[in-house]
Image (tube, rainbow, N blue to C red; front, side, top):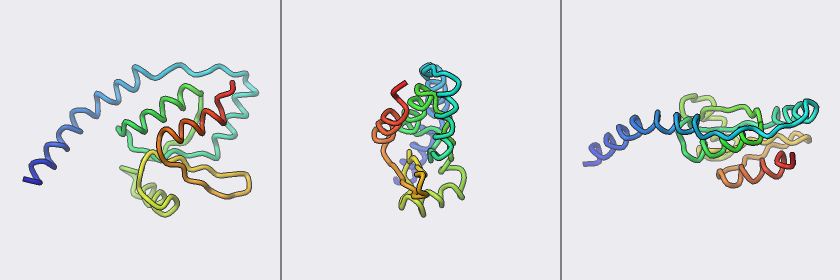
Length: 130
């Protein structure tokens, strides 16, 4: 019975994945507008950030939409399909859970921020006052 349930949900994910990705494309908001100097400063700050994600995770999609709305070019690391990224997430953050934002501070200290609402709040606090 477990195998039937497992294959049912795998099949369901295969059907829903393209729908979720198309929905993300169609509903992604427009980016805030900044001057070139302001955007360059934001881009430099984003160089110290990385989002560990799964492509079709609804919570990851939520974070990616907020990144698009704020005009952030944050590196995306696929922890589902890339075993090296998955290992980095496990070793650095302590668990394989997405979304997770890796934040490298100016002093070299690295923080791992989990939960889509917490990540979105952090991004809005840091970059939202445009």
